[in-house]
Length: 219
Image 1 (cartoon, rainbow, N blue to C red):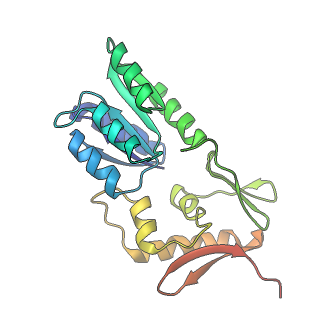
Image 2 (cartoon, rainbow, N blue to C red):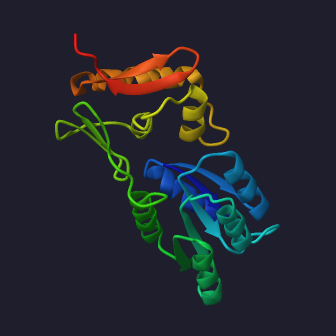
């Protein structure tokens, strides 16, 4: 899962990012409301962790602009312990959950997992190809009921239930400033192909376009 943290306290932001990365997520951080608004306009994220007390555009204004664009990105707002009015306004503007500062990292991670299971518009349906079933919410892949041992990036590739380009995969899999080449995508695809040999599916390369998963054609 790719997460954007909008938090102007660098110590808190770094701590959150490190903890969420340890859980297998890709995390980017911004320190102002303007940067948050720009980032969610230009890049694809699975979750926004939004501090309401941001400089150069409040978190509430970021949230309002997000929902005015009909963007269904899940939002977890962070607010001061006594900011009850802000919490209510945030939820009314379309936030999905909130945490009052100070908070325990384990509680935040649990809320992140809950929002991931819920998805942007309710729990997403499992993706099925042949004997392969991919639970998008729980991020679990199974072949014939048996769980596949896949890395976080291999799991992301399983979302190829439509044609996607290498650039789109890189954008979703990598944090800002992370050096990952398009050749790395080919390595992940090669590894995943080997793991899916018994599943009755294949990852098809559409030259000059991208990748797509389909059921294996019977000989």
